[in-house]
Length: 170
Image: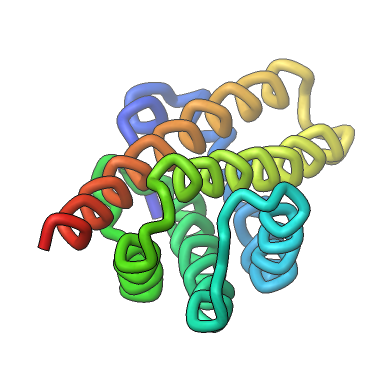
């Protein structure tokens, strides 16, 4: 499967690194997706980034799991982050937050904290790549991962803001 994200499609070294390093890391994350979702939820609880009532508690884990699974699928395939569509559990959670009058800033902070948690895990995996991975490949992997994850979170954030504002204004 060839990546569709332009920075990878236009550079043979990036394509090779994506296939050789990032796809295996994505597969590993797929195996740990639920644990990663739990780690993100713990981080959000620690930082108290959102005020959650009884109704919201049931939706948030499904929403976090859905976004982690989507991220894994897109990372694995090298999908273009600008083409993401929010998973239905995420849309439902964002709509609920808007109806609960949870400030958009608090919701967006949760995405930044999730990104930080995911990036920390990805960084550890990249730095722990086998010795057969050259330093140059490791550096390129770090750059690609950083750029892709920031693009993903940027577009996911824009989509969340749009859903939130539509629900709030309805």
